[in-house]
Image 1 (cartoon, rainbow, N blue to C red):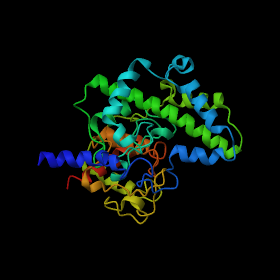
Image 2: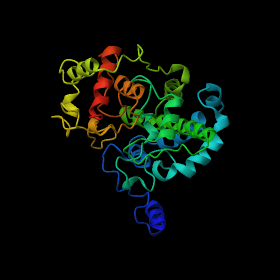
Image 3: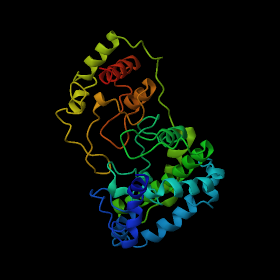
Image 4: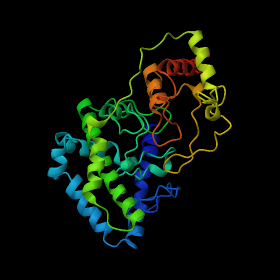
Length: 326
């Protein structure tokens, strides 16, 4: 039986030898929005000659691991990068690929697809809608995994190595976001972009000093029937939470618009069945509060910070928790 388990895990990687399902022609990329960067770059090169060479040169200048500019920015802990790269190649490259674009050899067998880091979007964060993730957000995802997905937990990996992984993923994301923005600017304006200006935008987005974390505005309110009832009312109120339109009135993921959504990468996405009690970012009160307040980046699940008061968000949390306790 254990040999069968090994075979199932290894199959996607062994198939590369006979060119069945190799990275080229990734059959899992079924969205027009999720185009391999090299393909998109080749297309833009046709009407903006020189953009490929400029992106390569500028990426190395501003986000290469020998870049004095990046080192002096204070946005990356270079001490952790070598170990982070090594552990990424061991644990992550099979799904997320060496560039972090989510197109590793196993990707086409997974649903949902592995995260593409190159847009700087990570679904589950403690930061507001406009902010990149904190280091601890990525550490939590690596440590706990994402329940109900193919992203496993890595608790058995040494804690320091997990922090090294966090730093390497951050660096991959900064570099990827810079390259993506350079290409998008060239495509939109049909001319070579200003690399220094775009590099400055990216580094400011990622610098820890510029990340705003969402904390509960008040301590958790009592988990009681009154709070659950208020949460149910908010959940089904078209003028407040309006959660039922996606998740259904009983939270089963069967709302009237549940079949209408795609994520920012262009793949179909369904609202969570809240009655199952499986929450990818965690089922504790603070986890659910952050998910509601911050939203889920890259998906139709938006932020409710400001739209609902902290007390109302706690009521929603308690109602959602009650759905899986019946």
